[in-house]
Length: 446
Ligand SMILES: Cc1cc2nc3c(=O)[nH]c(=O)nc-3n(C[C@H](O)[C@H](O)[C@H](O)COP(=O)(O)OP(=O)(O)OC[C@H]3O[C@@H](n4cnc5c(N)ncnc54)[C@H](O)[C@@H]3O)c2cc1C
Image (tube, rainbow, N blue to C red; front, side):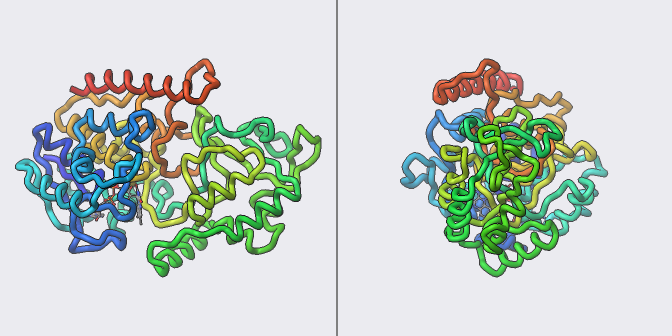
């Protein structure tokens, strides 16, 4: 018997992965007895916002991840296909029909018992003390007591209650003729890239930033309260709010150019937006101190005004909202087990992936890993080139950075050793590597 906590995307996939391989599961879901603030029903796998499971294209990063999930026996994806509605290139679903079907299938499985109860730290401690396997999949809105327990378990500083992150771009789409690598006063290597503003380009950027359309918060009061807490706890103010403080406030703050010389002009730029590597391979860069609450389309438009980012591809936009997730590179093994609490597996968005599909994917994986532990089988982490390997690599990458949740994207797939300049050819290469690697891994899991 394995206990799975949380009947969201990761939880139902973990329970399904375990039960369909012949083992009993007890699945705890606290709704409707206790609400999360975002879910509206008592159904399992409820979509809290959009109804999209991302691209159907087999040649997209999400398409490859979904192919791998199907290969491992996903329940979410075939159910989504059964209840799909027109969505262009994306797999969009009828949310009620989808979640009703998932709920009935999970509740009807002879090896799954669904318990409608809030799972508490005491329950977790009891199960782990008894040597049982536990999968925590309680998502971005994990109940407070369990979140606090995870914070204690991970050494407190390794659990985040809020997501306040800057946009991230694909490194290969940064214009290196403009952007230069340099650290302030040439101290500390060339890890940082610098986007140099002249006065005119800076003022134009600030004008658009201040006037850009902001995201409509999910429940204004709750979000405003969240924002106040973030400011209070993390000293983290949205960049558009800083810019509102005066037209030069960014040039004196987040974008200060001191200690930097643009090699093209031999001068210090008027202001500099710095980019920091997001992974060891430096295929992804985040925009330093650009956390914001603009609409995604607006972020794209405004940050494309930054010199050197005119054609940048965003793999993630900035957000500031409530989100519980652990600092996985510090506390998790490659098979999603807590290093300091054997038998405790973590699944879904709380590991530091983001989105319905990615969370479901990591639910399948954590479920399989928990089952392998129960059965005394050796763990086999996914190979680096496949989509699973790319997500796990993100969760294991201990590059100094503010660890932040990530969707599947091209930048997570490893680059070839010999550079391929053509973007399309490079992506085809990444996909073929991913497919081969996944097939081998799947065979080794059998
Ligand atoms: C407001 C909001 C909007 C979002 N919009 C989108 C979007 O448009 N597209 C997208 O792809 N992703 C979106 N996300 C992210 C998406 O919700 C998650 O990626 C996905 O649902 C995570 O799956 P999960 O299984 O990890 O968590 P969830 O799906 O949230 O499931 C966790 C479950 O655990 C339960 N739970 C929590 N604590 C306990 C406890 N102690 N005991 C028992 N049960 C518990 C919860 O009730 C919940 O059912 C959004 C998230 C939020 C909060």
